[in-house]
Amino acid sequence: MRVVLAEDHALLRAGLTQLLEAKGFEVIAAVDNLPELERALADPRADAAVVDVRMPPTFTDEGLRAAIAARATRPGFPVLVLSQYVEQLYARELLASGEGAVGYLLKDRVSDVAEFVDAVRRVAAGATVLDPSVVAAVLERRKDSPIERLTEREREVLALMAEGRANAGIAESLVVTEKAVAKHINSIFAKLDLPADADDHRRVRAVLTWLNV
Image (tube, rainbow, N blue to C red):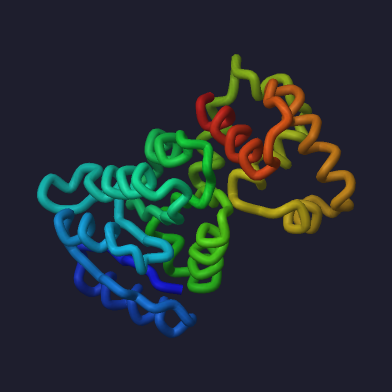
């Protein structure tokens, strides 16, 4: 799998490049500024991107904007965004298209090599992966929202969906059957007024509703 990497800190960029290549990815571009990132994202050979939110020149949200623009040009293009801080708005903007194949992780999560690599692979495969810290922040702000229609167990299932877990992973985490998980997910879709559609899209839309708390 060919990956574009954008990170302005030289040591972290070199470390991430080495890590990804050791895990079987081909890093076709490792850049440290917005113009080079935009060129790299336009490369049709790129299969996915790992992008820092803040890039030169202003160090605000250049990386995020470039990622969103790339997905507008190539719908569903997999992007995993890295951030120093929990910014619920960033995660919401990434998910706004409802297409999935996006991730939002705190940079601290990179220290867990297995978790980071798994996140890259899941995003590349079309999943939505949110940092557990983002999940926790949203859970604290869910009052007076459609999420209040859900039972406590359904909220647990939705939180795990937001972290990018498949039904099997949710079942393992909650120590229930996959059949029970599927039942909870169908109930979540109904309570959030999400009409029948491709399940992957409804999962993203359910998480997006949850992020809008």
